[in-house]
Amino acid sequence: MKKVLMISAVAFVFVAIGLLARGYTAPSPVAQETITGDWTAKVKQTDRGPALWLSLNRNSDGGKGRFQMSSDFPLQDFTGLNPNANSNVQFTLQREAGVVLFDGLFKDGRGVGDFRFTPNSGFVSTMRNLGYDDLTTEKLFSMTMHDVGVKFISELKSLGYDKIPVNKLIAMRIHGADGDFIRRMQAAGYKDVPEDKLIAMRIHGVDENFIREAEVMGYKDLPVDKLITMRIHNIDEEYIRSVQALGYTNVSFDNLVAMRIHNVNGEFIKEMGESGYNNISVDKLIAMRIHGVDSKFVKEMKDQGFSNLSIDDLIKLRIHGVDSDYVRRMKGNR
Image 1 (cartoon, rainbow, N blue to C red):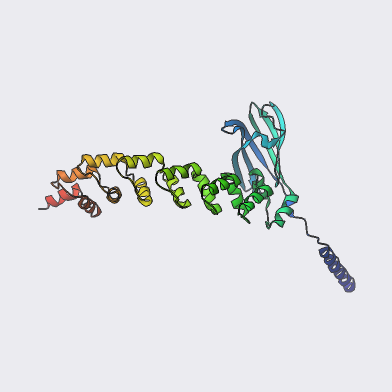
Image 2: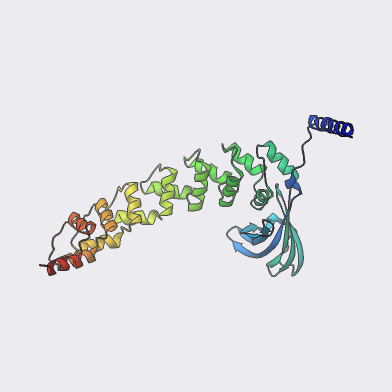
């Protein structure tokens, strides 16, 4: 019996070696997996024409949780879709990474039903040859929904973006950091921008028009981080012109951001002018806002007998907690 088992084991080893020598690899389990769930949809008009707003819900982790995603897709992305069918429908979304089959009902541009996603095993092999291993069904599903495939990866590679992780590829696709955007940024003088910053630029609306707008206002050749900062704090042409109209020209970028963050605007400057404080430097305007020096505080101090205080004096009083209540208390202790 032991001899039979030994012979069988040896035979198995030789068979395995033979298979490996022929280049045999086990089929990817991903290719056999599917994802199922339910969907709702409605047709809406966009600036790019009619689109399908699609919301997908599915079970995950063995039914212990739920996953939901929503996005709009051009109607032409789908095969067999008739949103005005007023009957049962079956249509597909076919991408390089896989196919999503939709079954359900569509009536008057609104639909509901179930879906099944099937990965493309050939795509998995192609991606493995490009250096992308361990593509889970989850990632393949996301790649399918956001149209991340070999074509997109090759385009990015031709522009100098190679071996980008799948999660970042998906994020770039979601936010429109694609080949067209990269070429436009390169034409505007921004080359070799890291993918994270490309995504941030798209999220916050930094494009060639905004870059030109900043240049016209005197802020030329700004690094990407500063352009993003301007967008985050809503520093646009309108705000810069309003600052310049008050006589504050050639304000440094950092001071411009600080003015916006601390709400140094025309109303505040006018208010302080009416309180007798004119031609205040940008640094002091910012410090006043930081420490709460405004026309109300100036009046409180005047009512307590402190007139003709300098901006520096007012700031010092605020820093040390001296206000009208404190002054009254001190006077009451005499």
